[in-house]
Image: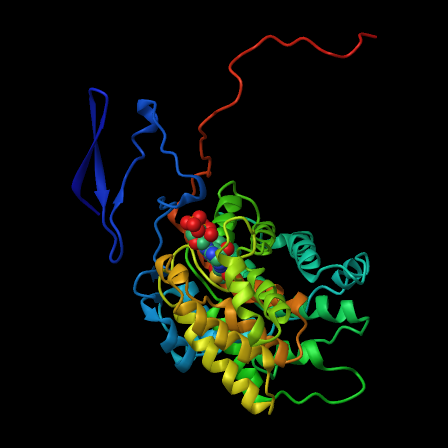
Length: 427
Ligand code: CMC
């Protein structure tokens, strides 16, 4: 809604722009008219740019608030389940009992994948990074489910959403099983979403696997805490890919590729590696010194966030879950001790205070996943599995609102026009 105006003075020209207000958060200057006047805004990394309108997730980075469809993340993590959160993200309202049962039945009845997809896995080296395999097989789903790829058809979009939501845990667990050289384990539809994932990860044909309810709940929470985070790099990638009308499986594969980087979803793997490298509390000062050194590229992984300039509210829940899991397993993890001491030191250090660098969601998740017996190479895959619902919700919202192809401009700093003369010998 626009009720304020901003005036941009460029030389002698005054350009009047609308100031838009959402229901929460900062006001935004509508610069769409600038292009036709010969100006573009320059904002690498989109630090001051709202790329779209959205009703799904709200973050107040200064206050450390995260709301999905208006509901605070800690309430969702403590009082809901991942599948209910998925419903809320996709449809906007909490489901009634009947709506939820239908939703759950649809998701759980589509967990199997086309049997031929198993053969795709065998084309990958066993030592491939599971994120490389996830990118490949997710994109390949379009080759198997091409009966519902009309992105302008609401029902097709819904079917694709169900397929992705249902099949991601199966594909993620297959990546793990393939890396071990173990047989793939078929999904079991009587288990919960998180329980079924753990079953497909850890069951073998030789013995019964009983899902531990504390670990099942912890996995469910990890999925809830990673479900969506508004216009982050991977979600923006999914929207950008989708803005051309590309099919949903290709768009989600693009999101997975973007998530893989260590500044984004890859941070959970990197954070655990860092804690292992630090290995004991006596080494912390040296790592803090390196993180502060401008000439050293080292950063404290699991610290800092583009939007949160306060404690990441997801990290608070993750920390509690970490203690619950270690208690249940009767484990005393030295890395948790290192993590808590590192957090304590960093939170009292002027460098981190001034730059508002706080632990983010990835700081504790690696310790939990490691305690569950999940190797670090699978951490980002689990993030991708959890974030799929957020990506789909945004992709769908973009289509429902009417798409416009994403086509940013640039500040060109290359050569001006010059004459071409080849340096190669003729003939
Ligand atoms: N350790 C040390 N210094 C840091 C860190 C860190 N983790 N993060 C930022 N800084 C410093 C940075 O050097 C810069 O200093 P200066 O102003 O003197 O140049 C200042 O803080 C601002 O950093 P920035 O890189 O300009 O901030 P950004 O908003 O572009 O980056 C970030 C955000 C998350 C990429 C960054 O904080 C980072 O690399 N953190 C470590 C990786 C990580 O944990 N990522 C997970 C993010 S949460 C999960 C997700 O959403 O994917």
